[in-house]
Length: 108
Image 1 (cartoon, rainbow, N blue to C red):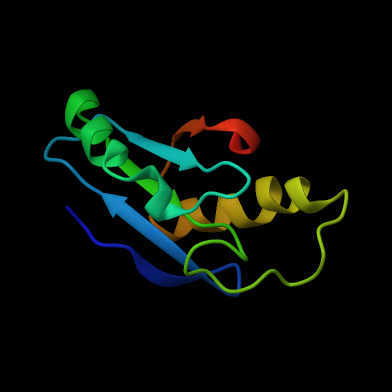
Image 2: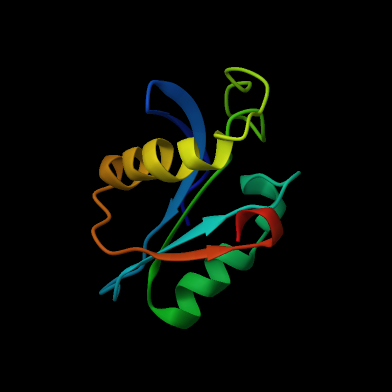
């Protein structure tokens, strides 16, 4: 299983973890809850990857986990920025074409 690492995504350092399995049938992207991060998922991502035969990609949003602090206070556009800029940049960085998004609480 891969360890969390920092990657430059959309111009900022984000903590990510990309779990890959042989002959993966796609990629599940995990979106954490309000106070979550990569580490809060614990062993769930590895179990999910194994049971679904899919790669799993997870990341800590800015200001969470080991990612850079947030660029500014959250505004009404926070989720729009995540959906239209950060997430597409993350998917491009890891060459994910057709992700299955799985969110918990705020991440949903």
